[in-house]
Amino acid sequence: VKAGSWGARTVEKIVRMTDIALRDNLPIFWLIDSAGARITDQVELFPGRRGAGRIFYNQVRLSGKVPQICCLFGPSAAGGAYIPAFCDIVIMVEGNASMYLGSPRMAEMVIGEKATLEETGGARMHCSVSGCGDNLAIDDEDAIDQAKAYFTYLPSYWRDQPPSYAPEPPARELTANVVPAEETMGYDMHTVIECLVDAESFFEVKPLFAPELIIGFGLMDGSPVGFVANNPMVKGGVLFTDTADKAARFIWNCDA
Image (cartoon, helix red, strand yellow):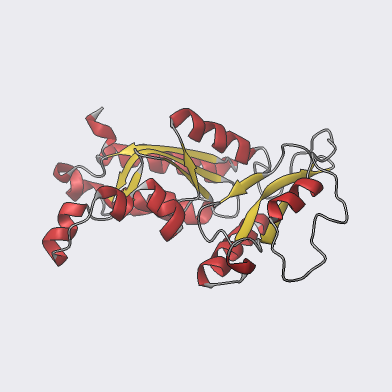
């Protein structure tokens, strides 16, 4: 319907939804495929206490209180690109999802540089270069499945306890040779994590961005835990600016 674009009533509905989430401490799943704000409605859409800015204000107030999970199926253009940016995790469908303030055509008009939509705001670019995206999905169904899986590790509200599950033995046994005795030998930290978590329970976040660091959720004896682990197989597991940012943002989510 109208390419999912925003009008004044669209903003009213979104603001009302976020108000209810604030009042009742409800998590939010954002399912986005939008052409952005309609030019004909912009005069009514942005100004005022109940304008589009209220959406972002409410998202900030919700941050750390309830999970905000975003599935990006198609474009999220202009002001709509801020919604994913305020979420705890952004799952983008490869080949379809995009997130940008200005289109490639606008960029060419302003700075004279030609670029494709994928280069300026595509799913793989955001998940591997900018870090604005967290996980790639192969299609809409996969994105929803990942969002549901991520949510299973979290409480619905920050004062609640995380969920617990029946414990499972790890898929791999922790033996002395999992970590090489020689300090100069590299190894894949994913193998160590498999020895610690309940079988098939590790959910990695941002696997393509700063891969020298592994972050994600897993279960240990049925209880959710967060993992932050250097990966010696990638750049020796050395910390860079993006690595530190990746770790810090994940720890903030764990501490919410």
